[in-house]
Image (cartoon, rainbow, N blue to C red):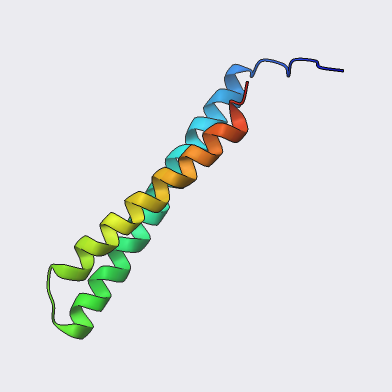
Length: 74
């Protein structure tokens, strides 16, 4: 009953790593774009783009960690 899950294949590893890349990149890009538009609307040039980048980085790393745990659990 306590069988070990099969080891991932090379193609599975490539898919997981590309998924992690998108999991990190999409929130960072969304935060930067959202911050850029907020800065333009509120005339606070570097503030919201930096906050958006930071928030996107936090969300992206957390999402990649969750994906890593799901794919590479042992």
